[in-house]
Image 1 (tube, rainbow, N blue to C red):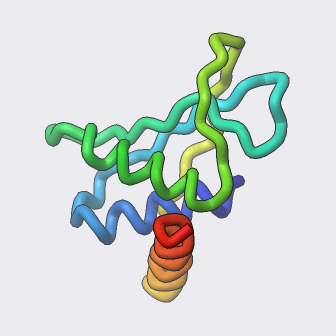
Image 2 (image 1 turned 90 degrees about the horizontal axis):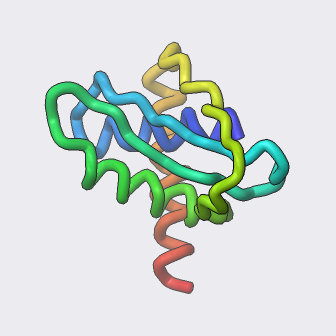
Length: 105
């Protein structure tokens, strides 16, 4: 999951040209599989709603289920942001490919 969070973060930064964004993921304590309780993009001072929708689509395209069951959740670690340009390009390509497959299915 850490790799997916970083890849989606890098992809969002490239798509939006918003380099100060953070991707916040809430997970359920008792669902260790591909379930996410919530995805939220945090930016200052812009409105992150469109970016949050993009992030949700990216995680669904990667095979996650996003559903808040109302149970206890915890914030999953953020992407540390220490990536090379090459890693950012790879992340962008990976997420774009996943979205193309998901949209065509």
